[in-house]
Length: 481
Image (cartoon, rainbow, N blue to C red; front, side, top):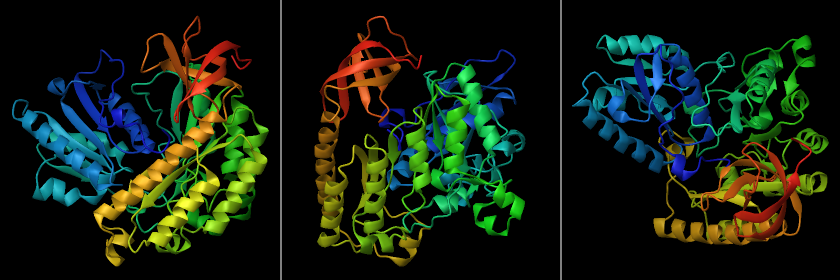
């Protein structure tokens, strides 16, 4: 899944090989989006230099960190239950310290530290380099907090460890923060203003991953299409940049090309895109390079212009259709997925039908669909009444999911009879006798193992399918090996 890490991975403890020199144990759980899982790798890398090995056993942890998500209420409730469990364990391990990282940390710092007293440390997403100092504060018996949002921190100089990695695919963060003030979203308040990472550090990280045997990278950002490097600083300050900075600036299409050229046999994906920011040069760059995958995650959120305006989405239904048409024209084989929110305040039945008709037009390959969940601090929570009954939200969500399943099956059937390149990621969940990998369109492909291995590119003839999975038989190696 592209937008949200698979449910089975939510909250799993992340581990890597132990360094014998390290004397303390770190237990770290992650929730939410890929950015949080990527951030946990950065945190583990920083703390490895401070004497911490990672562990998947709470009972041997000296420091417990939870990397949190504030996008939906369910995620926060899950984290609170975990914090209660950690505090119960502290009764038998009184030296154990508990910290909250990420989006919840910034939003609930006072509540978690001072009112409820359920954590020892609160660390915002831009303060991970301060962790060694904060841990020293905690070791000396004081609570520690740093939730200051940065104008320039991108962690471009931190080489993340790869936690629980399959050794084949990896995430590479290219931007932090977001300037799009969607009324339903907490990200601009929890992750700060948008800034981009030095392209040379991104290419260097991709090169290092290739040397370690990785075969696919996903370039990550809250909004990758607005990537803009002009020597550092916030994107909003680009207008004040010098003429030389503007002339040598690197946009997302330029970055895609730099990565694709640097490692021509490395598969390249990216997430997440924003309709208002995706430009034709990005689509054209995808078409020019074989190793850039034919897949775009393109959140729409609603099919109604009225609701889009209420959400402060800076695209219209018509503009979205134009973008879809351009993608289909330039990249006929490109898969497209969506994010959809139903039950946004004031949404009428007519608005809901607009969403269904938009889905019928696009026929997405897959999607991530949610009922609206009011988040404290957002513009929607301050200005709009959450007035759609839960039973109406649930009914509309079920209709959206049902339609998406129909379209997903339609899209997977288009692959039948084709021979497609698949990167083997591991053993199939359902059978030890089969491999699982993905094609360029990010669809899961399952086929008999035979003599192939993890990390190899294999040509697979697609013989059958479900709404989410392609089934086939390998016919030989890809020329990409």
